[in-house]
Image 1: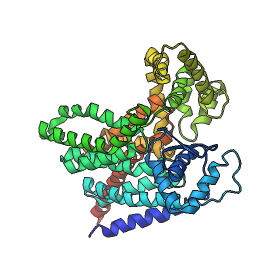
Image 2 (image 1 turned 90 degrees about the vertical axis):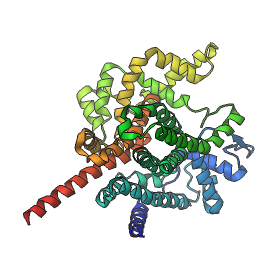
Image 3 (image 1 turned 45 degrees about the vertical axis):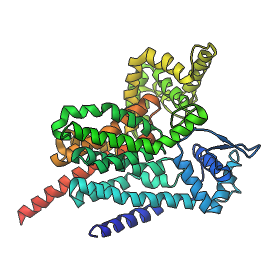
Image 4 (image 1 turned 60 degrees about the horizontal axis):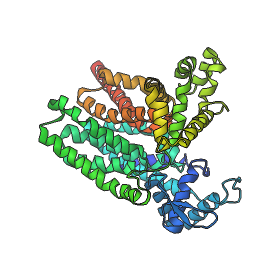
Length: 456
């Protein structure tokens, strides 16, 4: 009961701060795809796309299921929302001036869910640190990043996966360091939940299982014995598979693919490998260009437009989309030869395996680009994180920090290897950044408390 007042404070603070960010903005770009799948569930109880001609739904596995299902559940509850979604989907090529904007049900629900889950995040931080100063500081920095509020106003997966991803990271650290099987189960559940919203987390699961034997090199710190490791690993894998298994089986039955999604991965990968064509001058310029806010103008000044134009999104000759178009042409020709089973195979063999060193070099650069979440929050956070990694953080919190950080770095480089790695793809970094900020704030609070206490 002693923590009830803290929970109430966090929910009220988060929700009423977030309301300020909710606007009357309407769907845009990728948001239509999620709303379209939600509408298919609502209209025909089928995960797929509704044909405008027939009104029938066509099954697909283009996206992970939970976010469209979440939107559809709200449409069943709120008929006005359902009518707004249908109207906008039927008028995607117009300005939609006559469509009702009854989207506040979605936006409010997203904000409420995050506010509630944030209280559990606070509880986990308190369990790790035994410090309310640290726990509140970390929660405050998560909110000051702005992402939870910003994406609550959108119809994108970021509005739903952030809090579960944060819970996964924190419970994973507790499971490993405190040898708690129940937290291994909770961690696996929330990782699976995040994977059913954003498929990249499925690959993170694979990576974590592959690298888990590394714990044996630090068995005195992380393991009592082999039995302890085995129990935690088996529980983690089992819970994850139970949660994601039904969706993977569904895709195997309908599309002969035991995968979270199908038929989409070659598009972002085509855009990614197009960046491998940058010149040495463009490569150097990009380290400056992709700094937040001021980077693009500074890079143009130092390197000239001839070395920066293709790095932008807006230039017609940029790697996105002109570069992707060139890659697509090459892959189309390659597929016509019959030497490749899929477009993904062709991309990997033509652009990645044959030029692995260059692909790795550009991956490092794109990881740099993706690190700067919420601009200055990530930019300043880079220096705070370096401080934390080299020993600034308290010894009793450092191991937790390292375990929280590791999966986010894996995802950062994975995203950079397969996509254009914009900061939005790496919002999970907000937690280790906030952790580092909170450790610094706690250190400063203790220093000034001791300093002024010593003056008395």
